Amino acid sequence: MTYKNQISEKPKLPLISIYKKRGFEIINEDTMKYFTRTNAYNLIQNESDSELYSKNMEVWNFSQKTDKFKNTKWNRFLAKTIYNPIYDVTLVWKKIGIYKLEELKTKIKICIDKDDDVFTQFVEADFFKNMIDNSSSFNELINTLNKYYFEIKDEEMIWKEQDKWNENKNVLQQGL
Image (cartoon, rainbow, N blue to C red):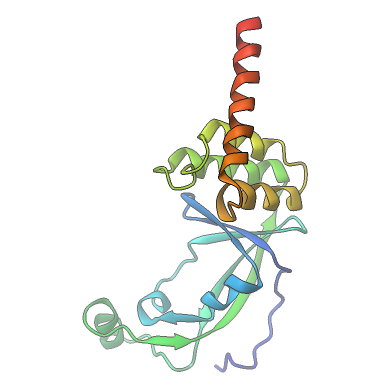
């Protein structure tokens, strides 16, 4: 089977990837190049570890394929032990469903809950999850993730915003 000329339907970028229900990332033109090369060990894995969410409310995954690697017992042994070469691969996309924005936001918040202070290195988890909840579209969600995690531009401004949010939250709690 030849994969080089295989054309599959593929989603429009950017995508939000949920990885093993523990992590998330934004996939865009700049980061897509990291998926077009992989090692032999990854090629022998049978299942996709990620769900990728598009602006069009579609859920995708993909497999990485190449004719240069043969999945034999000997190659699997080598990939798991002493020889794990890198291959150029073709991505074969598969649409696996549709979603609602609230479902995606919930999955991201679950990742934050399971986090070990990576996603929350600049902001508190409750604040970050509130900002995610306030995102009313896919684009707003991308902007929120970039602002508070992926593309921190002004830490001081974010800290002030978080302090103000905490003050408002405390006032509301005292008033109840």
